[in-house]
Amino acid sequence: MGRDRATHDGAYWKPDGMTETTTQIHATAIALDDRRAALLFGPSGVGKSDLALRCILQGAWIDGRHHLATLVADDQVIIERTFDGLRAWPLEAIAGRIEVRGLGIVAMPHISSAAVTLAVELVDAPEIERLPDSAATAHILDWEIPILRVAPFEASAHLKVLLALLTGLGKD
Image 1: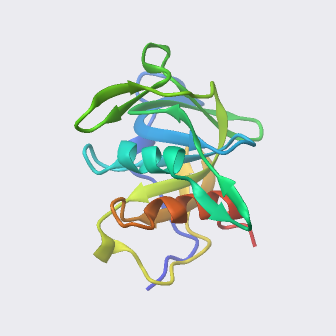
Image 2: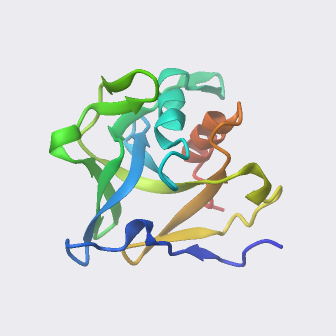
């Protein structure tokens, strides 16, 4: 039932009025200290900002070290394909802001750009395979990156994202 070298080529990252190597998408991007980023995507209201907030504020203890994410961009992310991968950065007008449901738009420390090394598709729990194909990828601007499917409101969702980002999901 696993995907054999599957790619996810959804409408989330089709160039729309930009160039063949740059697009603006409805997503949220977070990064580790080394500027490796995860791109959280899914339909409006699915929990992208909430999951990012947990990665930023709670983090995860992995291999005896506490890892926190930093915001790159919330709601709208600019993605550029470069010679060695994908880069994400925020729209200038909303840089350093994240939507916190019930609180509104909140200022948050952020970084100006990061290398996108993981796509995280937010889905309902029954849609997630227990043992997914580790070679599954997302195809963004003619570049493939590993993809992880996560139910955003599971208690361990932020731990799964940070663990996948830290361990380099898909790299055998």
